[in-house]
Image 1 (cartoon, rainbow, N blue to C red):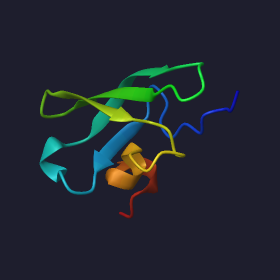
Image 2: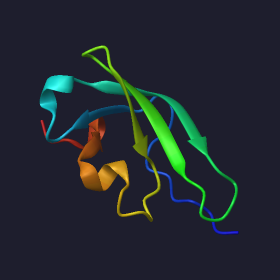
Image 3: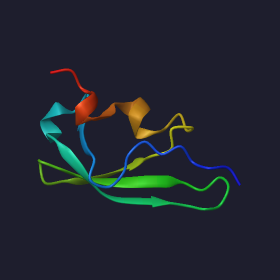
Image 4: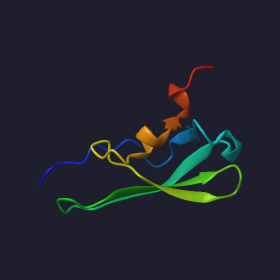
Length: 77
């Protein structure tokens, strides 16, 4: 069984590079499958009041990192 390379953890604060109007979000839940080929997901609660779910496996081209989600500490001031 291969280990997933996870990007986000509960408590991480994030922003989306293309959807700034969402505001800052906080990862409120992380779920991952222990089966090969299973998905890794995170739920993020944003300042606009919406919860959004994202794929969280850095080995997947659909990972939230590649779609523009960044940990706030990684963003330039």
